Image (cartoon, rainbow, N blue to C red; front, side):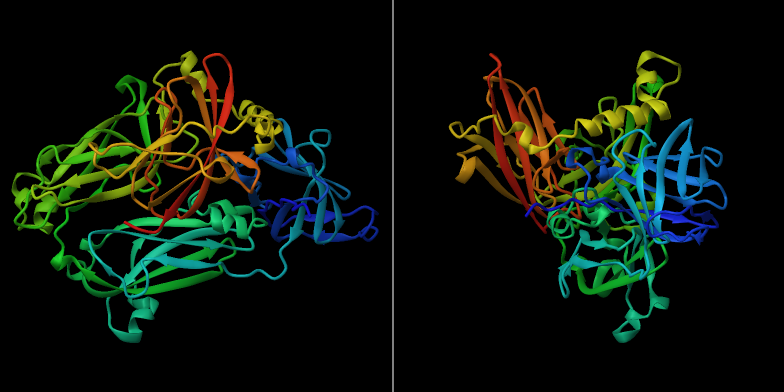
Length: 542
């Protein structure tokens, strides 16, 4: 039986009364108040290739103020006069910037059907249903496990979904003993914006495929335990609170045992960019961004000047300029070898070639004088390129709203599926070379495709993998993540496909877990084509 894909978003309406004209399921001259929370689905008869690019689409707002928040491809647009309602009998039209964004009619007081981008554009296949029994978020707190011994920087991760939409995930700690630790009045905030990560949990997305935000279920955060009470040594509780759009919340808690007193590995954190922050760079500064952080290591060891490496989207860019004095770190950690000279450091990154639509990852890796090594922080961030004067490049980067909609609606019609590459043969003959870990001197190992031409790899969260997908005989390569069995999306967040060297690199950040199926299309110098199938299984670690 064919499974029908249903994508859900949330529409919050307030203060709008609709006069319904006679039609099936609607009383003659009835007046309906649509204040409340609505879920938006694809109707069952939608053509699969015609549904909106659902993984990036949500629409919500309040009609009483005339204010709308409209998200598209993670872009944010807000204009109090930009979006308006027009009610004509039982019809509803939402317009903005001269275009009808939605058009539909009432089927009954709790269902609106036939909504499309306009009355004439696209099949009328979107349906709104009122949320009647609003439920709190559900999910799981998976790392660290109950009773785990932790030190340094630790990944805190899990997943959360909701019948409407999870709007925030906050992380707290409590260090008081016994049952008092579960009393929220004793909690202290660590992070009020733990990110929900696109594509981080394919296992959850597959199980809860009918939840619109299933591809955003995974959440993760890197926490430096040294900044907790008693330097992160001793028992304490971690609390995660997920809240939905109507204010319902769910809390998960675990008890862990901090052991920084016996730690020998380096520790520290990345200061900029902020977690899920925007790294804004300017043409006048050659799009260079200064990435700051700090690193120390327990006595008697020292961090050498060249002991910290910087990775962006799984690719090493160079070493941090280190040994810069930081008074805040010197005061907080007075008895470490690097404190006097300086625990701070920076690295300048050229962001001119980084995509502004999707999040990126930045990761530091440190090695001390005794060879002790560890990851130092992991951040998700966005890139914003700002041009000082108008140019062809700036015009390209600053797409107008209407052009933005037009371009992405064209993408929807060309939405890729695995079936479009079914005719291309699988490359079962040539091996794939790969290596794992941060030892740059380690050698690549060859593996041959297994059953059905599938290549399988296993890594842990925070571990790097480099895969030479194709040989020199291929001139072009493209890569995709397989979503929902057949749909193709971008490669995993925070990864890089070097099309020149045919190499795929990835350091899965906090929150990523599960089996990530990828498809690579190779094109030879004479035009011949083949494909590579692979699964990268990410297990919780660090």
